[in-house]
Image (cartoon, one colour):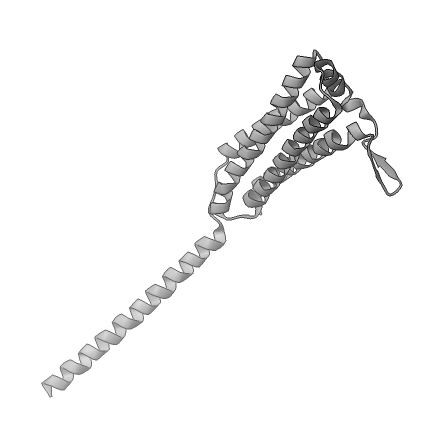
Length: 196
């Protein structure tokens, strides 16, 4: 694995973790957090307080607020999943898989853009501006720059495939040379037989 693949792997892994945490925050923070063993995670609803206030100002019921947070969490989780597959295809795949990684990464950007748009509509309609909006736009900007960088990278064919093709060419050439030598000897023997 060359250094450019490691660079893209680390960059995309950061955004996978970021988006996964963002999905967990919008899923569990409005509910007061989640208990895991002796830990209570995402208990402080400070990240989503302004979003809840904006939705209350609009007049959304608690059920509608849960649906909005569920959509935001779903978009972030889908984006993280697509980006994870794009990372695996680009880092560990061959030339064909590396090319297929770009549409997956673009799908991740589309999901993040949908989450950012939904957050923007809620915050602007409720007359609020909060941390969640900044987090969503930070994710969108970072993913967009990652995809731009990924699109400009040059996909190189794997060396193992080139070595395999070179080995096959050598075997074919050796076989053709042996066949030509055998044919020449056979022709020489048949000529000698006709002279005698």
